[in-house]
Image (tube, rainbow, N blue to C red; front, side, top):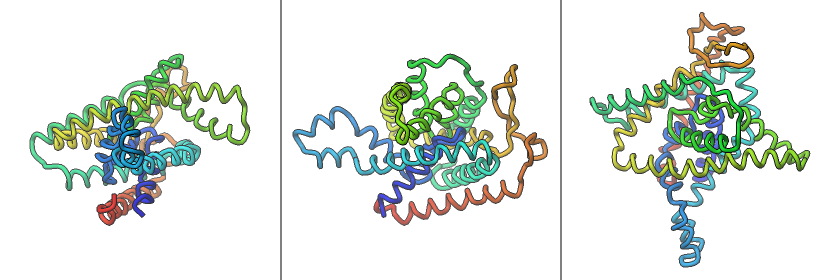
Amino acid sequence: MRYLILYLKGMLMGAADIVPGVSGGTIALITGIYEELLHSINAVSWKNLKLLQERGIRSVWKELNGSFLITVFGGIITSILILSRLLEWLILNEPIGLWSFFFGLLIASIVYLYKTDLKVNLTSLFYLCLGTIISFSVTQLGVIQNEVSLWYLFLSGFIGISAMILPGLSGAYILFLMGVYQIILSNVRQAQDLFFDFNMEKFIEMAEILGVFILGIILGIKIFSKVLTWLLERYPQKILAVLIGLMIGSLHKVWPWQNKIFNNSFSEIKKTVAVLPQDFLGDSPQILKAFILMFLGFVVLFITERSKTLFKNEI
């Protein structure tokens, strides 16, 4: 049961990571595996791997917290492979419902963390405001339009994974801002298609793009997780306040009613702006559906927190 719960939490992280505006780090934080995830990633090092011959696989595996990492990342990868098509369809066809659910989940997460883990004082409020300003500023950046090269894909993976493990900063949204989100998503779909209709030319092209991107991810997650762990160990309340602030600053990006602003050619979306339902320029604001799914987001958080309490001795 322990690893099933971890696997499901990994799947939730994977689903969040591929939605622009939502962070897998947020899911890890509210499900109680965030700090263990960072420590486990940091444990994967040449120093520990060199001990294989001296101490044996079992001892090193325990040192790396291998079962935890394999289970969580297995859930993340499974979710990305299975849900990438579904989530892309939901973003295009049911955006209000999708964003409503994540908005409710995010609001409930902020309230829960603020009440249970944060000591409220002037210092924590300052850092909370700082995190909010940083997150909001990042989400105001315009989309980069350029020719995507391999070094740029590497940089995108490096920066994107750093945001993915930060609650409140969406790695998928960072990739969207950098102009590579659709490229990566289409190559993930192509990788799935090649299992059923293999083509060597397409495989080489896909492997080159995803290989360089994943290399950036590996380097980024190692460096950034080490820095973040160091900060959490020394300034836990300040960093927690910043993380909650990052989540608050990203709320407007998962607000269900967004009007699109196009660039001068009207062919590509420059950014989206959160508006009230009555100012929404889409087909229908679907207010009832939106509030039902917001409430469902609250319920999911409650169930997640209950599972964390029930299995805290195991996980």
